[in-house]
Amino acid sequence: MKQANDHIDDLIIQLLCGEMDERSLAELRAWIAKSSENKKYFQEKQEIWFSAVDSAHLEKYNKDEAFQMFLQNVAEAECTQQNDHQYLWRKWLSYAAILGIVIAMTFFAYQQGANHVKDSFADIVVEAPNGSRTKALLPDGTVIWLNSGSQLSYSQGYGLGDRKVTIKGEGYFEVKHNETLPFSVNSQVMRVNVLGTKFNFRDYPNDDEAEVMLEQGCVKLDNLLQVNKSQMMVPGQKIVLNKKTGKMTTETCDVNTISQWANGLIIFNDATLDEIAKRIERSYNVKVQIASQSIGKYRFNGDFVRQEQSLREVLDALAATGKLHYRLQGRMVTIY
Image 1 (cartoon, helix red, strand yellow):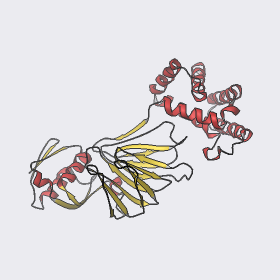
Image 2: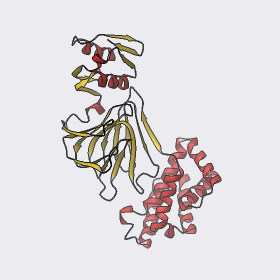
Image 3: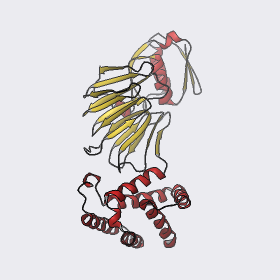
Image 4: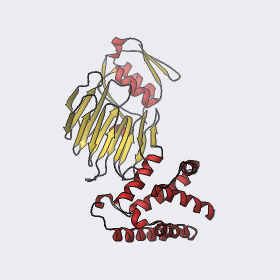
């Protein structure tokens, strides 16, 4: 077992030093993909390697201080491990000395190692399938709630040179503040740049509109459908982007309701039946068919708690307005 870990340690160090060939890279990838324990082991070694230098202080880097910090990090890790693991931590220290960790902790090698981690491995993907919600915790402490039918992806090197994530769907973000490393959320049509704030970002690929609602802090919203079209947002603002025209409109919103969907609350605020149908499909993992275009333009208001109220209860409430009827067969809903 120790011999196997020795070999994996060799491969990880080669990767971080930028000395890995394609064959070794393929071997390491296969080993990481084999189990969650292997992935965790790789991430722990990666964190120790890079934790010796704070990216905020790279410009005023002191190699002696960085090396002492690395020694301290390894010593602290040893104290928290079982005796069987202590050899591995010491071995990493010896490797560091042999391979020139002092050099590796200079700005060039730090960046080189970071880039190899980011470029050599596939992005981490977090998904919330239809009918569910998912909470994700990023390495820097940023918390993200993904709504039904959403997908979030970010590099395994997240936080080393940037804090960039890509989303398809809807997410509520509580971004950890970092003045030296801004956080950005990207979709096909817009991008949000922040330092640390709370906001909701929604851009489902099949929707006609995308929107951002700001609860706290300040963000810059870039319209990727129009060149040099950006707008700063303040709390209580909602910006809606029409994907067909590329135009953005600014509205006010209630900051107290921005994150309520993360707690299971479904809010219809003057929403068309077409919009509601999409929400129902994602929230309850069903298919909704609307019989005519005219019905789809009807507007409704209402609040529902997804965990407490069934799909039929939501449909009954809509039908109680007298504007429509529905038929529920299995996972198919027909509204007429």
